[in-house]
Image (cartoon, rainbow, N blue to C red; front, side, top):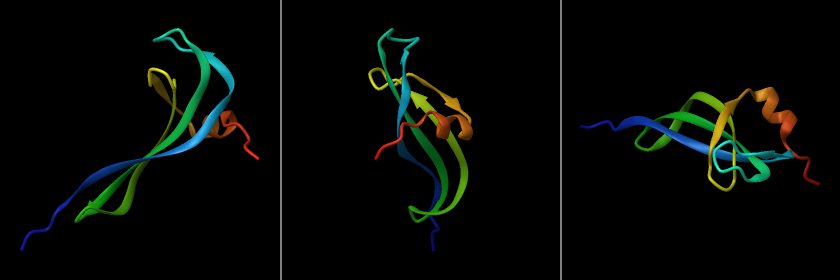
Length: 81
């Protein structure tokens, strides 16, 4: 009997930044996208336990970005009504 286990990451889009930033990589000015990445422990490709959670802000044009803190991510997200 084989047990297939491993890890998997899932991204969730949290929205766009309130302020337009100039990208360090492509020099375009745009509202960055903010997303959360969670790494999961999986058994038979089914996510069971979340191992880590990280927040990122990235340029929507070239996908260049950096990791940010949770509080920064929640402060920078645009309110959508």
